[in-house]
Every structure is written in C-alpha cells, then in structure tokens.
Length: 222
Length: 273
Ligand SMILES: Nc1ncnc2c1ncn2[C@@H]1O[C@H](COP(=O)(O)OP(=O)(O)OP(=O)(O)O)[C@@H](O)[C@H]1O
Ligand SMILES: [Mg+2]
Image (cartoon, rainbow over all chains, first blue to last red):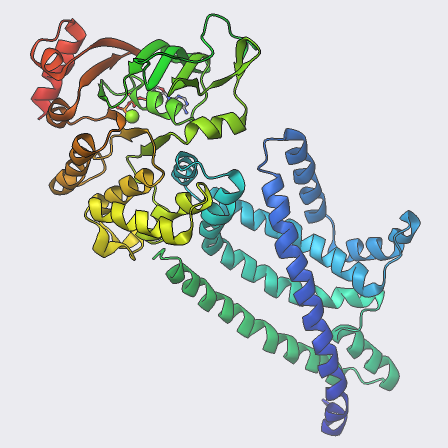
C-alpha cells in the first residue's frame, strides 16, 4: 500500500520551497551565462578568422558530445589541479552555463543564418559598422526564430539543475536526498520535487510561446 | 588580390572634369568564370547612366562592386576622385583597408530589387538608422531629415508603419528615402521596379524622375524598362558578356544602334513588350 503521510509532507515543504529558490537561482544564473556566452560562441564562428572559427566550433562540439555531469565533476574536482579552487555554486554555474552556451550557440547560429543576405547588403550600403549591423539589424531579426529553441533549453537547464547536487549545491534534488537519508522516507520528498518541477516547467514553456508571438508583433514581423 | 602594388593607376583623379565614378580596367571573376573583363566606365558628376543588357551580362555586378558588396579581381574603381578599392601608400596603390573603404563608400547609396528594408523598424526608423548611427546626427535632426525625405517620396503618412504593412511600391519608395538620408553623391538602382506589380511601377519611377530633375546626384541604374531608361538617362550602356558592347545617348542607342548584338537585344525586348 502507498504510505503517504500528510503531516510529514507539510513538515518538509518549507525546506523544499527554500531549495526551490536555489534551483531557480541556479537555472537563472546558469541560463544568463549560457545566453551571453552562447552568443559569443555563435558570433566567434562568424568572424573572418578561420582559426577562431574552427577553435570555437571544436569547443562547442566537444561540450555537446560529453555528459553534463562529467563537466560538472571536471570543473569542481579537476579545477583545483589547475589552481582553480571554486565553490560548488561557482563551479556548477560555470559548468552548466558553458554546457548550455554550446547548445544555445547552435540555436543562435540557425537564427543568424535565417536573416536574408539582403539585410547585410542594405546595412553595408548604409555604411553601418559590423557591430551595429549585428546589434541593430541582424540579431533583432534572428531572435524570433531562435526563441522556441531558447525556450526549450530554458526548460532543459531547469531540469538539469539536479545534476548540481553531485557536487553539493543545495538545490531541490540535493535537499530531497538529504531529507530522505535523514528520515528514511523518500516517497513524499521525491513526489514533491516532481510536482514542483512540473509547476515550474509548464508555465515557462507557455510563457515562452506568448513572449515569442509578442516579440514578433513588436518587431513588426507579422 | 594577387598583385600587392599596382602601378599605372593614378593615386587620385584631379582636374575640373574628373568623373564622379571611374572604373579602370576592372575585372571580376567567380572561379574560372570571368564576369567582367577589364571594364572601363566613367560617370560624370550629375550624370544619369543606365545599364541595359541580357541576363547574366554583368549589370548587377557593376553596381555591387561599386557598393563594395563584391570584391574586384583587377583594376581600380575611383569615386569622387579617390580610389575606392585601393588606397595610396607611398607612390602607388595598395588594396584598401576597411577603414578606407568605409570612408569612400559613404558617398554611395543603393536601392535593391528586393527593397531590403529593415523589417523590425518603421519607415521612419529605417530612414533614421544610418544618419544617427553612422553620421552621428542628433535624433531630432535625423528625424527631420527623414520626415522631409519620406514626404518627398510621398510616404509621409506611412512613416510609422513597418515594412510588412506596406506595398512593394511603398517599400521601394521608403528604401529610396533611406538611401538619400545618408546624403550620397552617387545613387545606384538595381532593377528597383522588377519586383513590383505593373500598376505601382509608376510610383517608383516618378520618384526617380524627381531625383533626376531636382537633385544633383550621379546615378547608375540597371533596368529592363526601356521606355523609362530612354526618358531619363543621359547615357545608355549596353552590356554584353561582361563588356560594354555599345554606349551612347538614348536617342543614338535606341533609334540607331550600331552593333548587331545591340540591335538583336533591342528587337527582342521590343517583341517581349
Ligand atoms: N556569387 C556568384 N557566384 C558565382 N557566379 C555569380 C555570382 N554572382 C553572379 N554570378 C554570375 O555572374 C554573371 C553576371 O551576373 P549579374 O548578376 O551581374 O548579371 P545581370 O546582368 O545583373 O543579370 P540579370 O539581368 O539576370 O540580373 C552571371 O553569369 C552570374 O551567373
Ligand atoms: Mg541583375
């Protein structure tokens, strides 16, 4: 029989909600790093420098072909050997930010490539600098087609934050594990974690879709 | 470019009757395909030159090289007396760096067959982007200039619309205003009416007529509209196989073409109309 205890559930709920804050913070910070770094990766692959292009492409390929959990371990445990002694939070944010930057760079690349060549030519004919062309002309148009992919990875990064528990970041999974080993009850903490993730992911996905159509309208592109 | 230093080309063009645009022995090839073969073409200040010719004869390429959208493989292009594709170093010319190209390119504006307006900006914003961010004008001055130009092309009432809300003819008129807002000395038009429905072509050609009569612009135009070309051009260049096969005043070229290929082309065009 399923042995669900409501009093226990309400006892552990505050602790799990605090951990939810940490999960959101980890996902938020990690995503912020990924959004910016991903753009750097994508733009670096479009510079005239072949060396830079190939180097960054290989880095992206390497990150995408190895497991996130390995990257987290690597930054945290191998980092110190290179004199890089990081807190679990810092190491975790670097690892997850880098990991998702690699994926987001591919999303951006698709978005940037989808902007018609004529837009570049118009920008050149107006003598806009390369930087201006990117930030005023190309990136705004690359955004709507990138948003769906960006949204998927936002939900993805949220769902991957439990991997940070392996180096002791006190997010949801880590807290649920701790509760389990203290009380030998796993049903309630894990069920709550599942519900909380569901409650976070579903609205996020919906919000992205709404944001996407709002943005298209705002940019006058429909 | 293979040769680093060019000799035999002047560092600049001087004198009272120097051309506004000068192609000197300009060659362009894609791989083994030579698209333009040692082209010599001068356009005087204030002159309207129209390029006609069969598909693939290199008409668009001429304009794109001048707008620096294509590199060249040989020769030199001069604009307003100064080399565009090259820059002086000591007593000879070397390939231009991007700073030099940007400086000379600022004298040239271009309108495209597909308009290429920025879709996320309104008509007004399209016309203000360059003046504010390239010329460094204040928003207020740029806005005034943009509004004047939009009024000139008959688009004042649509200034707050995005391009997706405008017809092709309206978009092309905004594109002309956008190019003029940069105060170019040379304007390039590449088949600006080819993507338009027949009934709105007049909107755009009328704006170009106005430019010819009211502005002292040097213009190079590619078009398939022979009647329009005949009306407004000072000179017609007939291109064939990457060379100027024949050129002359509209009367000369249309009424009394000398070369056989010109005659064939013109009669084929007439039949199609
Ligand atoms: N990017 C490119 N790569 C390879 N070949 C090209 C490229 N652009 C143009 N060409 C070739 O160069 C030649 C001249 O092209 P161009 O566009 O200047 O012709 P055009 O006279 O403008 O023709 P149309 O009347 O069809 O517009 C053509 O043979 C074309 O196929
Ligand atoms: Mg063409």
